[in-house]
Length: 254
Image 1 (cartoon, rainbow, N blue to C red):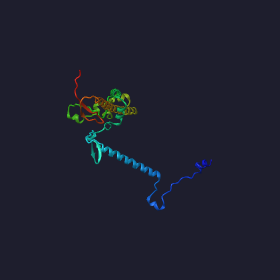
Image 2: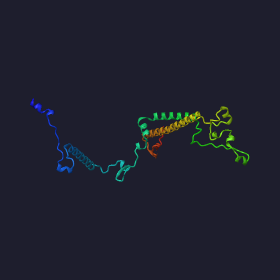
Image 3: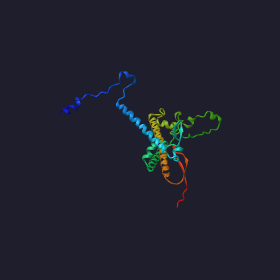
Image 4: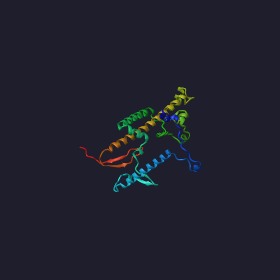
């Protein structure tokens, strides 16, 4: 019973490590055992690493060759790989598709986007696209005096606000019949214009997505073709916007 009483945690005194003596305060904190252990473990780890590297250098074959010897060079004291890695030639979205999906899925999504693009083009007609080439309309008159006094608004029989339009340019008579001469651009037309701009924005996004899917499909097909054991020559390097182009040795098929 007495031995158990001596072993009780409540009756034991807390152990306190001594601090740095006043005469040695200029040397900083006194190193404890846990600090020494961390320092000793780090020193031993470094010594083992140096020993392993020394052994690897001694056992190295002088006739050994690997491709990184010619694909890397020393720049400012740092080894730099001159040959770009495959993951540096693809975007993050391309990497996700190429590592998680196959070429059939990518091609299916690309065809779906192409069909939606054709539907949008058929409904919008691309009449007021800024990038579209502007058509020219030539008017012929009889004399030079008529050229100087030519009035496009009067000739087209419309209002000045609608002269610059290439579509939906009603005449004055039509505007009078519809009773909208005083309000050429009503709120409904502004709303339709905003919806049209939104549709053009969606169309541009779908066109860009279809191009990205085409690039991913081409890259996947190129990697599939490279599994062939035929002799091949690289014609064009791979980039983030285009797949690599290889020229394969012709094979006679039976």
